[in-house]
Image (cartoon, rainbow, N blue to C red; front, top):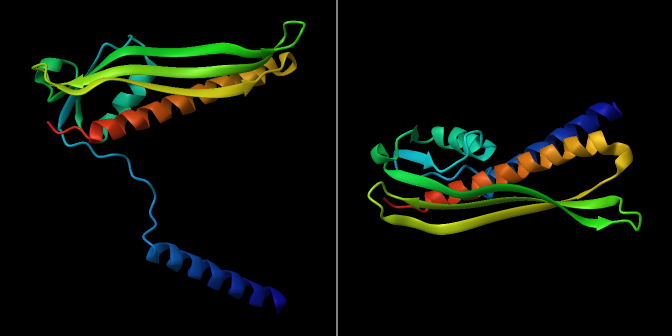
Length: 166
């Protein structure tokens, strides 16, 4: 008997929470919507993971073209760098902490050359503790952090592209 009353109270509490969230206007963040129909990505390295993710995200909204002269907007990569540096080590020169950085410099223009977004730099960094005894696990953690930082950079680029009016 106690468990059925408890379930009823939990169910009522869940329904109340859902109604409260719906009533306050809560909704999940939606991806930024762009106002143009086609874009070309130029200047990226041949196998750039950032370019691949950016292309995947953009293809959900617009047509991504290979040739910049047929696109409404051209996103030009000026610098796409992943960096790793040691920020803390022991007296025996053993690494204890690393800093990971993803840096992306870009500009957005029309095929005619009119600048829509002047040169912009996005820099995302994360700290990573390190231990030689768990080197393989730390390598996997590093790869995951780079993927997360890359997704963050792509989201920032999409937000900036949403502000472009062609």
